[in-house]
Length: 150
Image 1 (cartoon, one colour):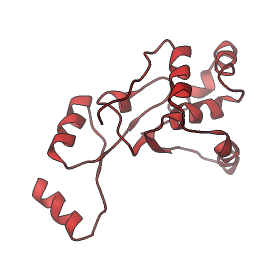
Image 2: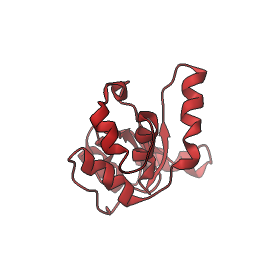
Image 3: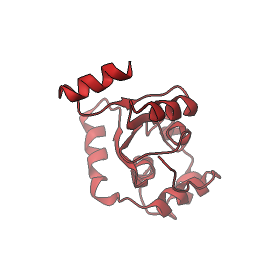
Image 4: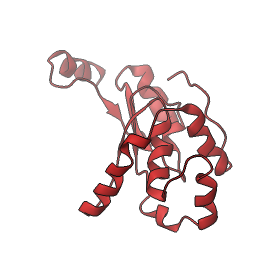
């Protein structure tokens, strides 16, 4: 399998592979094999599978709105998030995920032009900052994320 991956890359058919692991251990083993340089996994205010094996440069976050769970955010939770930076729930979901310096992009699900427009409104307000990322984690009583070897 490793040889097949290497041949496909050498032939220029793909630039690199990313892994959507079923566990942090699976991702760690994939990195050891040299097959996948990036991870694609869930990261949002309610689930952090992307962090289970240590986050690497260029990792891709999935499901920032956690299958519409963001719509259930309470007024109190939003007020706490607004102590980090003022914004609506969509902004905070995206800002949390994309503020991590090693996350290169996020895959969002939307079903209307209005949702797309709302997402695009926040693009310029988001910046990479590990302290911002950890401030969000603190609001939800999650452990801060330190630099990882990945």
